Image (cartoon, rainbow, N blue to C red):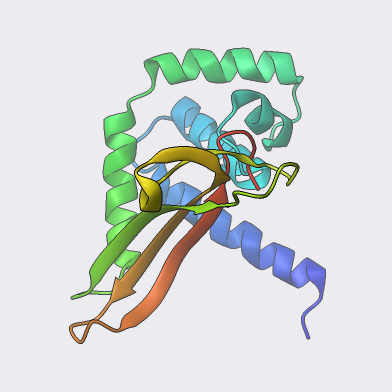
Length: 162
């Protein structure tokens, strides 16, 4: 069994390679910004600048980091980043598969105080607003309509990430 240091080293190496591939064609300043944003998003599991700043690689004050991230986001070339992301994603996805994206919800009509409980439009009941959670799932299926791989299953609330 591998120890935590070995697993951590593998994750860091994989993150470094992923970051390098996502920042191809960018200058040093943009590469640093992208790497810090990716690390912060990954560690915090949030897209809020305050959470990203608290969890980014560089240990700078949260307020200064938020200001710096805000400035960079205003001038950032997202089209070049999107091109890198699409190219990298193409390599990861199996060929000749159909991908099903299911945006759904889980309704909890009797729940009142569950953690992260928010309001959702119940698609099974004429889109009436009820207590519940959002559910996103992406699944690949083969030519025989059989599931091949589940890529994402995410349960979340409009109020708080679970």
